[in-house]
Image 1 (cartoon, rainbow, N blue to C red):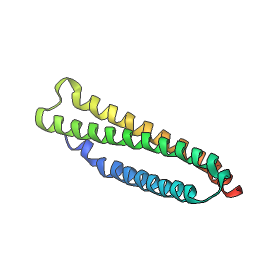
Image 2 (image 1 turned 180 degrees about the vertical axis):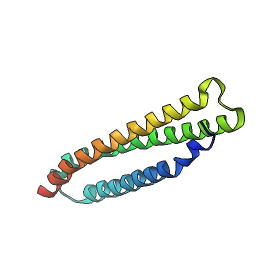
Image 3 (image 1 turned 90 degrees about the vertical axis):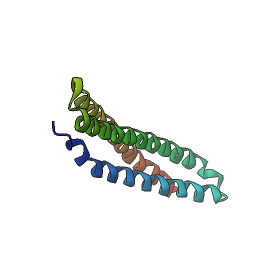
Image 4 (image 1 turned 45 degrees about the horizontal axis):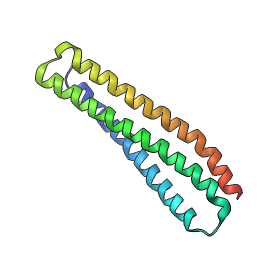
Length: 122
């Protein structure tokens, strides 16, 4: 494996992180706006949105870990070759973390549909 391979996927992961961060900020603002409304019936919506925020928080942590592992993989390979397959394992584990984060983002997206419909019905 060439040393630069892990670095080629970093911009794509960065875009996923940027997208997830924007979703988190928008969701946080939405929770804040709902809390400032004087409607007690929206408490269950706030709880659902807080659970969405938790899913997104877990996803972004996995993305950061995956990104770090990509950096480690590229640097280890560039500086030391591939000692005991460390570079490949780091890359593989990083891909797994990014994959898990994408699964969480898919889960968030499906749940967001139901939360949005429930919110709009109130």
